[in-house]
Length: 229
Length: 205
Image 1 (tube, rainbow over the protein chains, first blue to last red):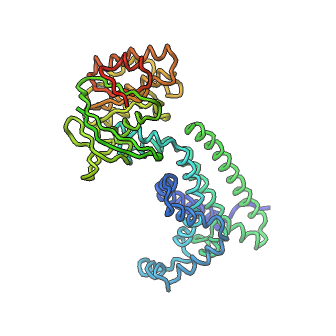
Image 2: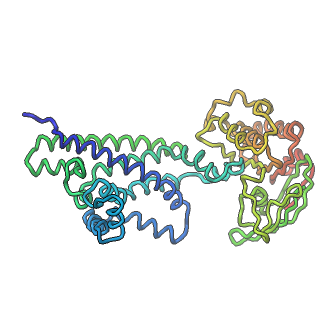
Image 3: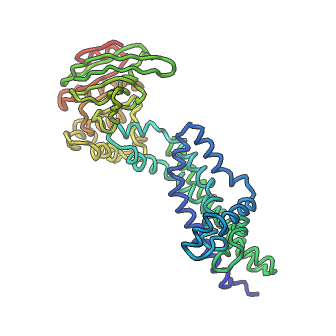
């Protein structure tokens, strides 16, 4: 019985890694300042933004995928602009699934970050200011190091969630090997074509990966609780 | 000289402050009942209570003038603050806590070695704040505030929560701040004995 993975599955592995890493890095850059603002703001506007950001958690991936597919079509401003700049459609491309992934994983990055920032004793920022630190300096030198474990946890959750995405990727990217076929779709493809050995390898790999991520997150969570205590 | 003419309403309570304090190398004690606004006064002077309306002048320089929309931020006032609860940065060891202030000081008046010696901090430098006693934490907090080279040092009940032995130990260091560092201090406490021992003048709110 030959159960080694073929080039398509290996390409799917690397594509998944590229997608998850890109999504995580971009989302961390966007979500750290956004989550800080949401954690500290008491305005109605912040509450509305918080609800919008959380929408992908309750929305079926197919609904999100459907609307993104419409938004990406060359008849819309976004799709038209993308087509005129790059010469290709946003739908059924890597950047299309990256965009969808950013939206779909947004709450999984924002919510743990917001929870971490809410636990931080903001009196430490006052102290930093009284010692001459400007607000941005205080954020970099006090908030980020104290919330380090929470930030790593959010990044891991975001990464793991992106690795496990299926519905929205299938809707936006289809199943194009090397371009949009990520591991979860390659697994689906293997099951559909009755290649159960390959399916087993990919499914077991994803299962072990998810378990490891959850264990690491729990370790970090305990460390964060000690740091903010 | 510190001139303050400010008012603030917090939790439906109104506080008004009109004081002119001659600070030249002196320690001014501020006394008053609990809730009379002693800490609020210090926070307004330090620029941490931005809702206060009025004017504040420190050594003839206007650091706050609400009518003209002038509000010098806390990080730019050169006013040190020693908090009741020390507020050492938990992710930094003692040395890094001290260096944090030193690196951000607008001008360096006191060297790290001098302050570390004055407060007998050498054996504590590598320790994390969580490993210090209450008195040791407060010593580090005062040293850190001095290292920010302030023009004025505000101290908000720094001895509260400490046992008698730790209090006596710290009082020794407070006298050193006055004699060795020549820093004007505003010292808030509700304990008369403490104020009598440390202050050149006591103001009752």
